Length: 410
Image (cartoon, rainbow, N blue to C red; front, side, top):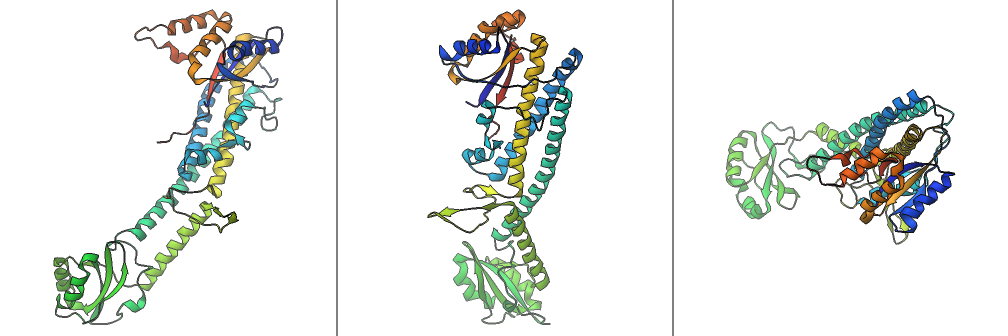
């Protein structure tokens, strides 16, 4: 269960009594949830007007930060293209898994100094997350361009012999070059027609050079043959070849163009290695670094500039998100329970089978705090057509949900 309920209730004689009361009602008697104290430091309260305005601002900021956290997480999944377990291994906060970070939350005094006002702290978060969001867009664009170029390159080098690049297939010596009368043509012949080609190619036109064909390359379906003939016979040869299911490849040997193709291939391959480097272990020995295709279904854990950036900034964004939750609990608790600040923040991890029961127990425990909220909850237990009050998620106690299931696997 990756869902948490972050709640707060006013301190009774002591905050410890509030905690003990929750534990007795939800854990010790009926195992409805696993609970942890959620430590929020003594933050600056400010004025009532500021708190009211900040409550709305924090709600919007919460939604924005959550959206960025999910975007970074989903992009990590898209880049790794691996199983859920492998992706989750890279989604850490401060070097630990998300559940551990949330359940052991400690306010980061260095990033978010508590001597600052609540508004200033929220602005620090907003500025940092906006920067991550903008950087992600830029990096995603560059990555998608690289990925598109690589996919085009892979198609170009793995497609049909009628369309694929010939840069690594043909050589200068395969062609008659700089001849006024002769030209070497390339013909794609289905494997099932090899014998027909060898038997008939010299007679497809009157001006074919005898014994001039050579098999240069073959894939699973076809072979690429060269054949030399007189230039003025090209059209007639092409027509007769097509009638016999032999397809001429429109290709003229140009050393400069082939060199450019090879250089582009090398450049993109180098870019790919920089982005994706994986380490294989076999028989306990570390093998050489190697790169593997983006479309591979068995990619190992990858390290590279983009993945490292995603890991670092996912951690930053997730940490900021949980601090925003803490700010919201603090602000809402002060607004609801008043001054002096006296409340206990608690993190509940519900037992999935008992979520409805847990909600009822919490309502019984805290309904005295807000009778109007308790009345709304009672109404939602009734099946009233057209009434959907449960979507309001307003309870007698302060409540915010934290869902650590951030990935949408299709």
